[in-house]
Image (cartoon, helix red, strand yellow):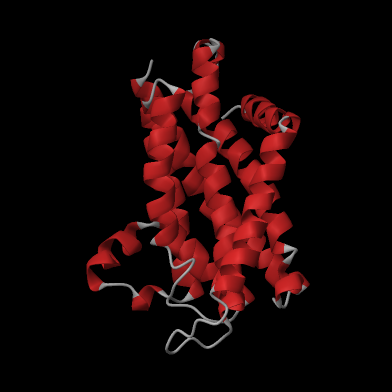
Length: 248
């Protein structure tokens, strides 16, 4: 693998993101709004068996939400590249499809993690107890989670030909993944028919691992969560490479 090719594509993704100040600010503001308004509005809620306050329970879910929205949205870069002919230039370059995919995934993950880390560091304002160790572990979990989510966004964008089609797919993907991840409500309180969807959702394991790290509660062992996230990252990246190959 040519590291230079991956680095070039990664750097381009990051530079494009940092030039779009409006999108960056609105994404961060959205997560803060959810945390304050939704967390405050449901702060009086009492879920049977919940071991912590609702806002503390919600906090890892909002960090994951920031990661999800930004990761999936990063796929729109492929639509832009196709629209302006840049994708053709990349595809005919010596870079392999894996290198192209790796560069875009790492770029999207860097962007998503930047926003999620900002939300993570606001934890003390809502009562979350942050330490150096749990912040470092959370960042590692966010990286693994974002690899899968960015890959899913890139797969969707490689299939779709228009911005409108991609936005439709985004809505179809993002909201079910978010609501069925345990970010807002304990997964064991959801109807049993939702269990299979919850189980195949990679965000479920990202939320659970971060909740173990930041709050000390969860539904699975944290090593199980991390293992599943790693497998999901490999699987979605492999599918992404195949999707790029199919669009030659």
